[in-house]
Image (cartoon, rainbow, N blue to C red; front, top):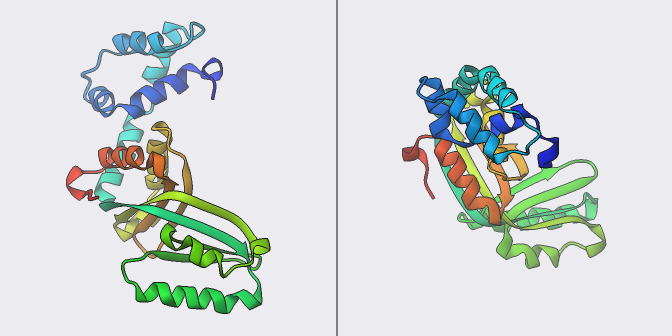
Length: 222
């Protein structure tokens, strides 16, 4: 979104959601909202007025946002990061299924490796350790390959099983990453209580730090 197309509410939402100290200070009534409006205006285009920013700050649904973040803090148990992840997607052809089965079996024997397989009638998508990309590509005809992703990182969030039915938890996670300019390549749940995010490796540290700030520090691990 270009600066000229951003509204006062956009600027205020970014300032509050990106800065935990501002968010906490507003919740406790410790932040001078007029000073905050002036500070935000200093970052914006001249078209955004001080009064518009002040009004947006006062309208910001702070309590609802804080409730979602508190719910996320209670739900998340552990956060972990893995680099060198890849995805290969290809046509779902009957003659390729034995190939997939062998690759899955070989990967299952190497317990330190990660593997996820998603299928549809038209396509198979395998998420796996990037170091085995050449090995898998050698087994799949190039004409059947639909998409290839490399240089990805996986962030695994272990949460209470109730997280899947709790409103606002996933949106809190994705909003935190979007605020920190991290694009999510893939989001999935694996069994009860596990949320898997794939991001570009170049964004991995920023994504991990953003989520570590959202969740209690003692629950995060590298």
